[in-house]
Structure formats: structure tokens, C-alpha cells
Image (cartoon, rainbow, N blue to C red; front, side):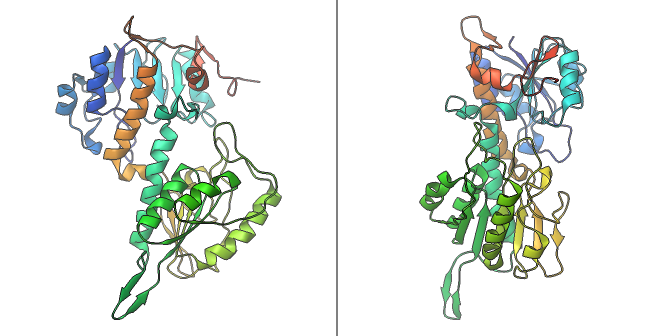
Length: 375
């Protein structure tokens, strides 16, 4: 198993490509064979000729490439599992908690479906961690977007005409996206506060020069995947009350709180927004999973009656597709390399490996992952 098809993303808003020419050249040298759908990399800055020079074959449509493909690689989940040969390995984001029909379709068609977001967040799998690579870029873009909309500058500036105080940025949720948002805001000269339900991240926040806002929520922690555990209603209410005081003074608030596989918790309600300064910016990076901010909209900016701008922060890495594709391609390349047997020159689906066991959802005509089996 070594013939790989790289698909062109069908969603107009998607700007990234799953594999870039440089990585295809390296993988081809190992023994993989690549077919790329024409135009797959154009939005990321990679032309068909770049892929051909890397050793890939170009086909006009995805259908043209599926007949020979043993491994299918794309970014977003497909509309269906139709058209792929039995036993094909399909690799992409799959949103498995919300796509049971799609998983059943993979199983019915005897496709081996790998969910990129289910790759375990372990030291060994760090190079394959698509969530970290992409949300890191999103955190960076969130700060730039907010800064571009704000009616004041971020750094302190001393001029003959007077002193401009630094902008205040409040980051809620100190995962990978939050840490990058903190680092970016600090580099731009802002005063940064941050909060997370996991006290263990306080040291990381302080190492970046930001202030960690302490809120006593009782017993907290994180999941085996490294995500914050879901809060109780009482803990959420306590968090909202304490955060409100910081939001009132902030020029930019960035929320990143997602609970994997569940609706995002609402952390900033309308009564808090009404107390914020006119011209303040909120970037809701959890807007696609229900939103951390009451009144946020995944499709557009919302301007409140008191002049606060609520910006959607969904898939912000698409705004920097060259680097987003490079990082995503590196993740997928690491996955392909890890399971490539150099002696047989074949990609092997090895379920004795904890990484494969964690992310392979369907095989042999059935859903095999314990978290998604019926009953």
C-alpha cells in the first residue's frame, strides 16, 4: 500500500492543501507514489507544475485518481465514502462525534478511515498533531485580526504629543491557540492577561510575560488528550463572574475554550459585553462549536449597541495558507512515514501501534474505535 491520492478541497472557503510538493518529493524518495488532483495547491501558492517536479502525477478530477488510489489524503471530511476501493486508507479531519452517518458509510464500503483529530496527543505523535499545528497559527491570526480592527494601537508609545498606554488583551483558554495569542500580543507590545481552568498552565503564561488571572473553581484538570475538562454549571457561573471584571478593562478579548466533541461553553454573556468599552474587540475562536460568546456569529462580525465588535474566529489558519499547508503537510507526512515499512516498501495499518489504534475508526466493514461503536 503506497499509492497516494492528494485531493483538491471542495469547500470554497478552504485555502489549504493536505500535502505540499517538498514533502511529496521526500516521500516519493522513500517509495510512495503520488497522484494530485489538478489545482489542489493553488490557493496555498503551489502550482501543478510544482507537484510534477516533485514526482507526482496530475489528474483532472478526484474521480480520475480514485481508481488506483490505496491511500486518500485530504483536509476536510468528504461528502461520502463512495468511489473509493475497498480497503483504501482515507486520511482527513472527520469530525467523528458529529458524523455517525459518514462513519457508517466508511464501514459499509470497507474503507479504513483515519481521523486526524483523533491522533493521540503523545510525545511520540507530536509531529503528527494537526490540532496543535493549526490552532497555533489560528491564535496568531486572531490577534492580528483584532489589532487591525481596534481603534488604538497595541504597544505603549511615548511621543512629544503625549504617552499612549499599551492596549490590554485578555486571552481565555491557554491551550496551543491561547499560548500563541499571548505570545503574539506580547510581541506587539500589549499588556496581556490570561485565564485557563487548568492551574498547571500558569507557569507557561508567566513565562511569556503575561499575567495569569486566578479564579478558584475547585477541583480541575485536563483530559488524557490534553484538553480542559468540562466545567459544571456552578463552575461556569463563577468563572463568568470573575472574567467579567477583566473584560471590562480589556481592549481585546480572545476566547479559545473548546471541549472536544461537545458544544463550547458560553463564557461571555451579553451583560458582560454591555459593560465593555466601545471599540473593544472580541474574537470567538470557538464559534463553530456553539461559541464562547453570547451573540457571536460564525458567518459575520457582530457590532453590539454599545460598539463592541464580536469577530468570528473559525479556522483562522486559512488566512495564512502557505504556512498552514506546510505545517499540516508535515503532520501528515510524519504519519505516513511512521507507518511505512522500509523493507517491504509498503504503508502498513498496524493496530498494535497506539497511534493507529487511537485514530483508525473503521476497518473490515465495521466501526472499530471504542468511542464510536454502536451501543
